[in-house]
Length: 325
Ligand SMILES: CC(C)(COP(=O)(O)OP(=O)(O)OC[C@H]1O[C@@H](n2cnc3c(N)ncnc32)[C@H](O)[C@@H]1OP(=O)(O)O)[C@@H](O)C(=O)NCCC(=O)NCCS
Image (cartoon, rainbow, N blue to C red):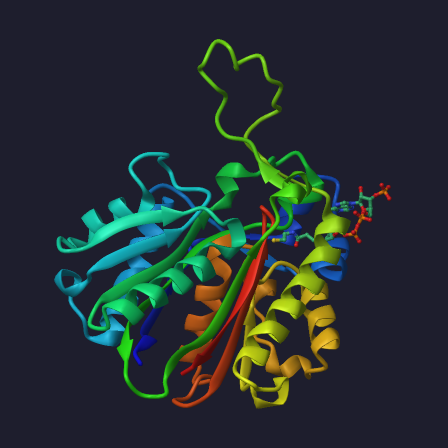
């Protein structure tokens, strides 16, 4: 049976770095508070020419280069994003144009911080049906454009960036062994972002203080740890594996305390959990593909290794995937 095998990874971060010290000059906060509560030290903030689709295109090109595949060979592009510079067309269509991937169909997925994982799961389903497809799966965000820079509760947490991978069919034991996705829309208010104000005269009276990310941090924290731990247990059980069999866990990067708590729940040493939240903050759908690309380029993923991916985000959406590298 064919399954989706990752044959190239890439990532792209904007040039400008915003430090905790910079934030101290913008809102009533401190490096000490941000570091102890979140583990974040710096985040990258997009400037002109670094729109979501541009970051996504650079990350995708790097993944293609690693795989030795040309844009014309790509059959499908899927982008997980909640912050593309345009509502229409999709970010994926803008990437298709930028890359000149003229033979690909393209669309976005809105699953917030789980968008990349949802895309990877979908790519795997396509490949199980049509193994010779080549699919670009991307997570890309410009959350700085959706951040209320006067709200210290949220503005210290997020950053911009993009990550990508190229997948194709594998007949070997490599690829996505198992995945499991979840959602619970009943909890949407705990983590959400309004759309642009409605232009429909019957709806435009609805109050909104801006299309910013809003969050009940403590509740999100609690759900995130339990949900990711449960999703990981579910995919391990599917394959009759134990956490001890795993070489590396690449989780959604939101907060170092969430990652430490996840390690405790799973009873794995922190060294088995890939962490880069201190450098980039929470880049939503982009955190996992950026982290996966860094781990790959650092040599922390070797052929045959078992990799676990897990995510949690607005919706709520969450899930996990087990990959043999
Ligand atoms: C947001 C988060 C870091 C806050 O940490 P916390 O320990 O829960 O902190 P609290 O919400 O209890 O806030 C404690 C105090 O710090 C204050 N505070 C909030 N942000 C602050 C900041 N940037 N600087 C200084 N003080 C801040 C609060 O106003 C509050 O003050 P008060 O007690 O006078 O009201 C934490 O809840 C979290 O990480 N949640 C998950 C968020 C997340 O990852 N979301 C995305 C998932 S995809």
